[in-house]
Length: 268
Image 1 (cartoon, rainbow, N blue to C red):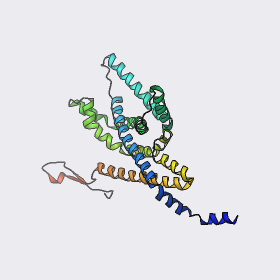
Image 2: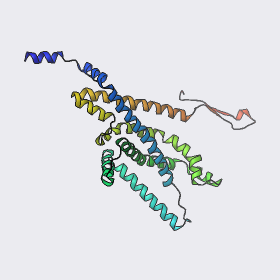
Image 3: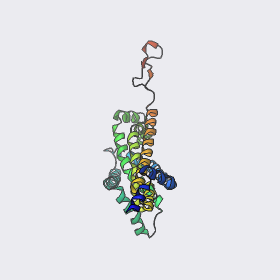
Image 4: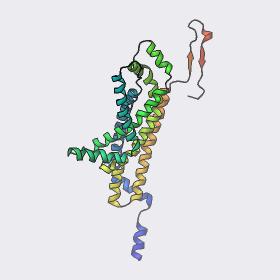
């Protein structure tokens, strides 16, 4: 009994234990964080491209004068895209990971590399959410801009690329950043298919030394550092895209008195 008490009293404190774990296993923590960021970044970028393409397709106008074949084709395409969006927005990513990874192995007899599988799963999931975000951003653009573009001979794609999308990209940046932060956290579900991201690495470390609280407290801090840093960088990008709040409206090219100077009232 006295020996047990002596051994307990000689154990290092909680902070010392956590620091010792970090010093011993920092390469595993770092590799896990690197895989998490890699999948989150590539998945978010690819998903955003998917969302942009789907958003533009789903907003193509169908005129009453169009042929029945064209109307039917657009109806089928919209139905397929709607099914894709509803499925991937309506099911958890952890279930999607199991179905895609093990379903593909069952259908083909070959397993996809786990890192590639994680990238595909996050990209497809993000694409479904981004499609609706982009569609909302396109709808929010004033219809008069579409009419003005069509009046000077632009087709739908030219209008989208040159007029609508620059506005949409700036307007949906906060929602895209939010999706990026969510993906950093949601990569943890990919541990079910053995992707060696941060949560998987942390679980492996905790299984070695059985100090679960200390290990996952370090993991929590690492997730917080990643999400906080990304959030700050995206806020800075938003401010850069917003431009300067101080500018001059030239009401007349010959009369300086007609110029209106707008001052920055937000301290930027």
